Image (tube, rainbow, N blue to C red):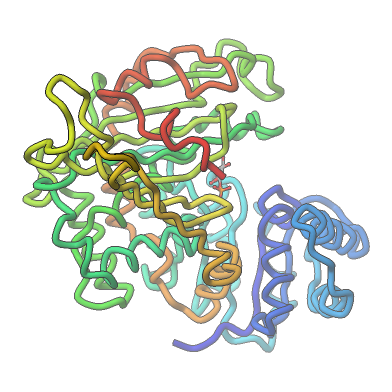
Length: 468
Ligand code: BG6
């Protein structure tokens, strides 16, 4: 694939640009990977100086938070490569201005870091000035708000762009820790033979945040936890954990396996869902008076295929929770006979593989070992690796995603059939949402969700001390 020769960023004054995209551009500049100019487009009437000051602040803030020193030369080079184009996204003149600015470039990457409701309008504007002929268009999640709207959005984009020019973002696919699920499963012979219903009793995927909606009330209230995180990030993690090995590591082979496993996921029914809302959510700015939007959701899913039949897969995500964590726990069945436990005594902890995908990503393997002393009894021991310590620092998701779009690799993006299938799984519960349970912060969501997993979620109490 040909490398893009210019990057266009719609939504340049937005939250995502400030928090993720500008710092990612800085990292790319530092690594010598950007090498192309950046045109930022925004509807706010900012001057070039105001814009550059915002970019600079976002980079300095991020580096300070990470305790990293800003390389002034890199920052200056990046700012020199950036330019702001101001204009209303519905006005043809905005796109004419952009077309002028882009004359002389052949292959733009156009990143739409804007409200999903604007995707179609902006694509039409780009099309009107001929910019969709070669452009790779990157669209942020969520792609639609249910099956019907995702189909409609796809139809409107497809009229203007072929599938191979569309790059649908799910930034979890840019995380090295999520990609590691594939490496762990398919580069090690140790686990794959037991990775099925004969040995695994259940899987638990948890993505929780100890903060609330952080000023995003208006956006969040129309979306909620199911659409914001579960439909995309959590279903992607589930797919990586449960799909069959692809025939190679090309984008097409990977996407084919993803759609296969997603097609086998049973549509979710109300008795397999718990929705919650944190106490205090209704007072947040931008939230509707009697909002029924969930800030927490837990689900029990089943994959009706040969490998996973009968294995419950639990997913949960929430804001204002006890801890910020992103992890998947794969719990194994007990050995067929308990040789080290006296009659009537509880069985030892089952074996567990725990993938930590948050800031301190790594893997824990929880095993049984002989307890010291003369008795033949066991204790639980954990083999733990923290990837950054063992292997060095990983790259941030957005840096890898921008780079993939620039080189034209679809591996880290979602394909439309998989996106539609993930909406299909949730369709009926999105149409008729279940009861909303209140929960207090500093907890793990409503009690109803805690009771979903027989014996409790493995993270709570048992391994929680290692949560990053
Ligand atoms: C975003 C959601 O997609 O992912 C946010 O819109 C959420 O609500 C964020 O906070 C979490 O991303 P990460 O990479 O910090 O786990």
